[in-house]
Length: 469
Image (cartoon, rainbow, N blue to C red):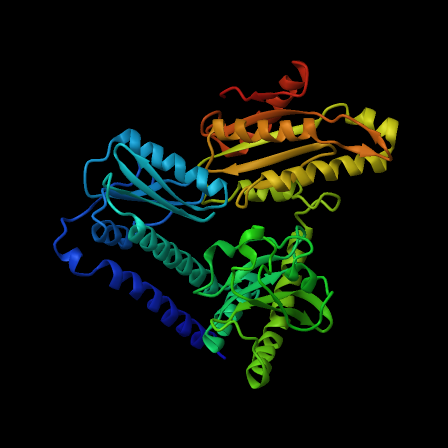
């Protein structure tokens, strides 16, 4: 199957989804609606204003629709009526909160109207309706638009190939998921082993967009398949182990197949057939062939990525090293950002009293805390012996201070022990932000370091902000 043919199929699939939204929203109600006025924020939005916002606002006679990509990007809004500035700010803040929580659907009743929120970690949408207006259809429309925007992102990823280096892990996974969906008419997700556990890195068009980047829980059917505890297809109602208990047996049956190349466990494929019936016979044989064709390409992409990562990773903690941190901070698309720098208090005493293996264990514990707190898109690094740093893209000084305080509190309250002996851990922090404390991004680490030393001088276990240069 050629790349052009695959991308053509992806285009057809995307067109079908987009056609659904257009048919739903550009119907007769649209013809009688007044034109919408797009009002982006002062800074350019991460994405251009999609026309679907105006379509859905008109179709639901909404006062406005708001779109945010990620947690700290700007909000794009389309308003058809007067919406108080304070309410717009509250909606934007709520979208950011929902993104931080990983996304969900909510309905909030206010004096100014009913606000419907539909959010994933990557895309967040809100619609403001009249106070007593029904919201069920608006919620369905927002969910449909969320799927369209997510599909558009997946298609863009699938069409990208790094120059001279073959396919990426994402493009291989997405193409495989799309091929399975086309063949079986089944939703599909591709999971690949990662340091934090098996992670969903590719989904088909109709699969739940919330699955993207979900990490399977230990003991789940997917986790067992990736670790090699099963060789054939298995069935599960909660393949990733992420559903609450009361929902598990109300979900559709999913089937998990290991993704293996020459005996190496790479990941797994999860599919949800509409009939809930296990693929068998010739259908199962063709499904196996699809996976076998993709497996060598996926392993090749994984090996290339791991080779590139070794140069920028700290072998002890798995976090980025100083070089990796510098590369992340140098990304040209960043418009602003904050840096948090911290080191463990009295770390030499820990090493002297408990030994260097204990010190290594403590550093790994801190790295685990950072993995939990730092979001995708931001960068955590070990930049020295006991010194760590976090680069938070598109963040303000207050964002950086909040992240630093969360990390400080977690370290202070972690119950860390070495061979039965509990050892209290604390850390001191410095925070700098660009362009708030410096006009030059290259100065951020030095500024944050200076603030860190002030925190040490003031008694440790505290967060200090950098002075403006």
